[in-house]
Length: 120
Image: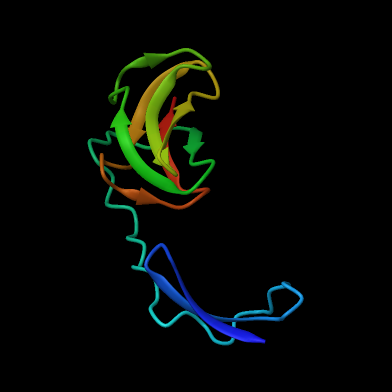
């Protein structure tokens, strides 16, 4: 067996590789933990919560707001853009309506399932 130190995205792992080439489980937890994920900020420019929720389908960072509170949207219109793994992912309106609240701001980090906006 051979021991190696591998760095992935800034995290350092000590691994043991068996002579036949298969990789054993990491010998220990990462030496350095990843930076903590910030909680979503307080609602930005929200008038009031609507009855139709728009939630994040994946974890990411709010890249751009496409709509504002009061804007009318049609099912499928992009309300905002999330950035995840260097990809821009449009978050679309699930139904026709009016944007009642935007619960995030550009630059916010969000988890999957986080409430991003609401519609009436």
